[in-house]
Amino acid sequence: MRQCPVCKKEKQQSEECCSQCEEQQRNWDMRYDGAIRKSQQQKKTIIDTIWRFFSSVRNGMYILIVTLLATALGTILPQRAYIPPGTIPEEFYASQYGLFGRLYHYFRFDMLYSSWWYMTLLGLLGASILISSIDRFFPLYRALKKQPIKRHVSFLRHQKYIRELDVQAPALLVKEMTDKRYRVRQDGEDFLAEKNRFARWGPYVNHIGLLFILTAAFLRLFPFFYQDSFLWIRDEEIAVVPNTNQSLFIKNERFLVDTYNADDPKFREAIKLEGRTIPKSFTTDISIFQTEKHVAGDMADLDLLLQTQVGVNHPVKAAGYTIYQSGYQLNELSSLTFRAINEAGQAADITIDTKNPDTEYQLENGLRAVLVDYYPDYQLDGDKVITVSKFPRNPAFVLEITDGEHTESVFAALDEVVSETGSNRYNISAVDFETHHVTGLSVKRDRTLPVFLLGGIIFMIGLIQGLYWQHRRLWLHKQQDGTYLLAGHTNKHTSSFEKEADRMLDNYRKGGEY
Image 1: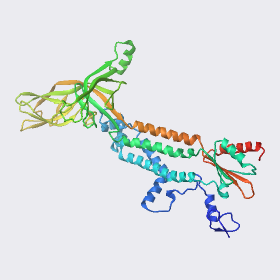
Image 2: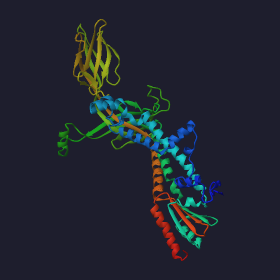
Image 3: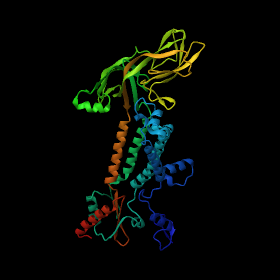
Image 4: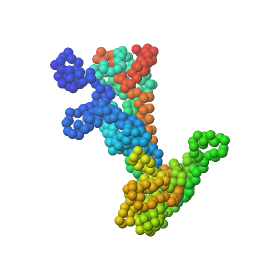
């Protein structure tokens, strides 16, 4: 009986090494140089189970496929952020896409990319990338950093490149390796030549870039990092920018729109086909106010930050935000005035603000009107009254008119007033209205773009690092009979590696020492 040169256990006289070591060397995993990963350790705690699940590449691929399918699902119909501003999502998806649109909105697929379950998928994907990287990087790093120069013959004979050499001057062969930018280390009469070890870290650099990108996606959930608000502001009105803790306000000083001349021969036919005037450009004169501690309803404490003009393709930057001219509404109804005549023939007017209507109105002729329902932009959907947008383009009101004894319910719009109770006790009609222009401004802030950019740059560095370089190693081992065994391994592009090694041997052979 003799000792195994690998594990030092007893083996048969005829065997080169014991059967256990022989099996291990036969199945040597050169991806991690035989290092044992944490996920391969035989522990059965709940942490080990979770670690083993997320470190599995197969499970990571399953999570990635589910995430890609969910991402594709969100592209079937437009997301809510990209439907026409001011439209009611439920009505938009139902009218444009029918039953499928209703279901799409019902299951909140119209806000898929900010949903909790989609963020959970991204979190699981990030955990899989992080844990699988840690599980593999550190064992590989330790194995490559402390890799021995002397290797067992059975290990060398399982490499991708093997040559038997009768080398008389190994220093000349080592010089050939050095000329090819190999870093050569020596232990006795054995040599290890290695180059481009950094290429092994390419996939892990990719993973770091992906983690930055996923982190940026998570940060977009927080208003401090990402904000995309849309404001409709009437002429001469001030609106607060959402999610600013009432610290930023915008006033619409004046809205201007320039249209193409219908008498111009160049545009006459196009305007005729369109059936309406076509805007050439539209701009808004705005004042931007900022305050630290704002009291609701008090506009006197606002500090003027900037007075400027914002137009299409000419955004304005202020207080860390970018303001875009994104839309407008011309001649939108500001208020409607209805005249109510009681049974004695006495008339009184009700003026209803279309933006902030009151819930109750006391008339001078003794009648009282209660606002039951309000449709800013009403239309009939069969027998049902719906509003197609939140803009008062065609407002309608459901009012209850009472004198204390009798109550009549009426449906009042600009073009018609219908008694829902059918009694027609009171005579109601629209007598006046006021209009205004409204500008649509997008207010955006995105502090995640540098994180996305950094992640993309890191990912590309890892991609180049892993694609254009290969980790190559050559072992030169002196055998017992005095000959040398040259064994080599590369993590990819074996053919070019073999050609490089053969060229080094040819150069050595031309020196007359082989």
